[in-house]
Length: 169
Length: 136
Image (cartoon, rainbow over all chains, first blue to last red):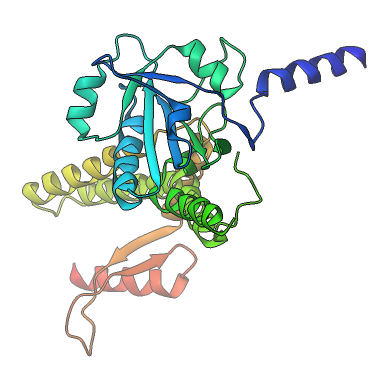
């Protein structure tokens, strides 16, 4: 009985990640050019943010979706990404996929801490986070990834809802 | 995890889940089914010995390309394996019940149509045997 309870708690702890909604921790986005932007600097706009691996096909596809959305909601939305794979060449990545938003370089520890997931836990990429204008995380991928947060149609409706919410408040 | 206080049209999520459900569960079953259907049909055409070699070559190439294309698009996670197996099983079971496939000329359309004669269709089998005997 005790062992079962212990195993249940351990499995719950392993699955744990930051709750939604919660205030987004601040994060330094350091681009390959050396340009640094704080995530908090985007406050006042809806932020579509993702931790990616430049080698992952899902991340590449999602990045093109984000680019499309960044144009569609250019007045209200800020898109940013942080690549945390080893030897990530973000310059080549942004050039190859024609991305106009900042893509920083980070570490796995930074990603885990930001997402509220214990360090060392396996992460599915991309890890997408949607932050409202007041800096509150309103949507976040599951630890092993959430395909729904990579699709154009769903993200579009989610962003529309967030933009509308901020206007009516 | 999405903040449920946000009002997002449920149709968008429903369409997403339906699409995902099809690609994860329906598609492997279709691929398994089509693969067996294709290979068994090819086997029967080859065994008949009546088809010309370019036709056999073309059919074999198309069948193998379809199945390989399906496998390439299919392998995403381990949960697809039983569904692929289910498709293979269904096609094998269906093909085991087929006695013959004929292409009689439709009396009104004046063009060949595919007609399947099932093993349980005693009358159809008898008619086919009579037609084959008459041909000899």
